Amino acid sequence: FNRGKTFFFDQNYENAINDFRASANIADTDENTQKSNRFIGMCHFYLANHDSSIWYLDECYDYYTETKDIRKHLSILPFLIISYNKVKDTKSSDKALNQFNEIIAEEDPYSTDYIMTYWIAYEALKSKNNKEDADEYLENAYLELKSQSKNIKNKKDRNKFLDTKFHQEIVRTFKQS
Image (cartoon, rainbow, N blue to C red; front, side, top):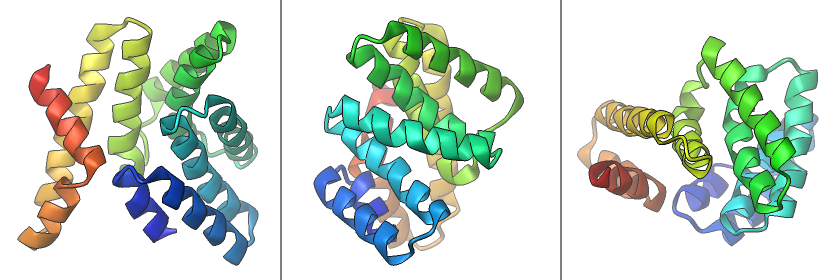
């Protein structure tokens, strides 16, 4: 699973999918399967396989609804907002956006999901032409990235963290805004 996340954050989505599938098969529990499926859905999103992304992320959304873990919804809904738009399902996209706004008004993402959630929320709101709110999420993602990097005491490890393609994209976008 951790190697899959490394591939994911370095934007090597095909290898990430393979590792997440292997992880789900090794530790065959609902929780581990949905943890892997969430990242598989995100990988499919970045590969522009929006139907597959929706399938995996809807399944995860339902699982986290059943387990009453609405904070996990925050990391799923922005991907669904964009994916539904890509497949021309505006009604579902708008519903996902409303759900995201309701949850984010009351809850914060898990610390492990904070950067990713705020980055994709930026992308989702930008796709909905809501630049003001989008820019706030971009700033939050950037500031959390910087904060988390400062907590890594070993400079070599800190640079590895900052040098992933995912993190570089956040920094580049923030500096251009």
